[in-house]
Amino acid sequence: MDTRILGTDGPAVSALGLGLMGMSDAYGTADDTESIATVHAALDAGITLLDTGDFYGMGHNEMLLRDALRGRDRDKAVISVKFGAQRDAFGAMLGVDARPSAVKTSLAYSLRRLGTDHIDIYRPARLDPAVPIEETVGAIAEMVQAGLVRRIGLSEVGAQTLRRAHAVHPIVDLQIEYSLLSRSLEAEILPTARELGIGITAYGVLSRGLLSGHWSRERELGGRDFRRHSPRFQGENLDHNLALVDALRTVADARGATVAQVAIAWVAAQGKDIVPLVGARRRDRLTEALAAETLALSPADLAAIERAVPADSAAGTRYAAAQMTHLDSEH
Image: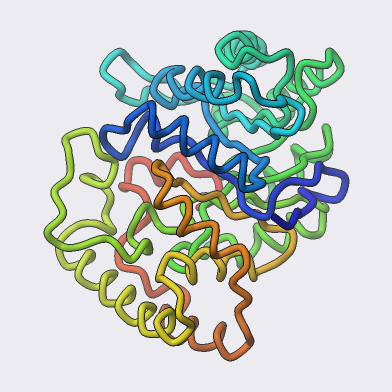
């Protein structure tokens, strides 16, 4: 697999990364055995960037990754960890804690769960409105000096926060949702990241399954599936968005590709400084996604994709209203 450099001075990582959240959380039940087999298949295919969070399944995801890496060369993996999201025993989100003491405590627990002596990229999951970003980044920088963290990343922050953080310590990448249906970063955040030499790791490239080509109006969702409460999966919004997918399918069929492959390849085509994270939970979905890495989209293809799914054409916000208020990237 080709590699891309995260940021100006960041590590070389695979052109596609693997997002592990769905193996523990958010999208219903997953099978640990199949999840580990999927991580192994990703590693064997050349994927090196593995993204997790300490709140995915309340530590389950990190321990799953530990098990998947057992017997593998740890130094060939670039482990990205998000921290700070607070949850109760029922899984409900309680806010964000990114105080310096929380940085150091969360890191210590993640290192233990992952069974490693360092984390390659460490980042707060969201901006803590009660803590200046300078304090959070400064605390992670201390952990860099201690050798426990290699590089610092951020997630879902706006351009000004990105500048303030980068002034304290170099930021290697910004993790943010980016897909044909979620393009708000293009106006200010992406140009700022490029000015500062900060890479983009793009999650949600299939818009949580909407752009997978496998979604249907009849699909039943379990009680703890994030999409039960996502505006884009509700009523007329879903009908509208699936019509966009049908238009994209026409473009994909003309290329002999799947909808998912075209959607992933489109994100990758937006710049060599962007690394799409694919959230495959099964080997068959991973195999489909991997083919996007070699799908070269011509200018004519890109124009056809833009006509099928114009910017700002999605119906519904990417999170429910209450969650949108916590996204510094949307303010």
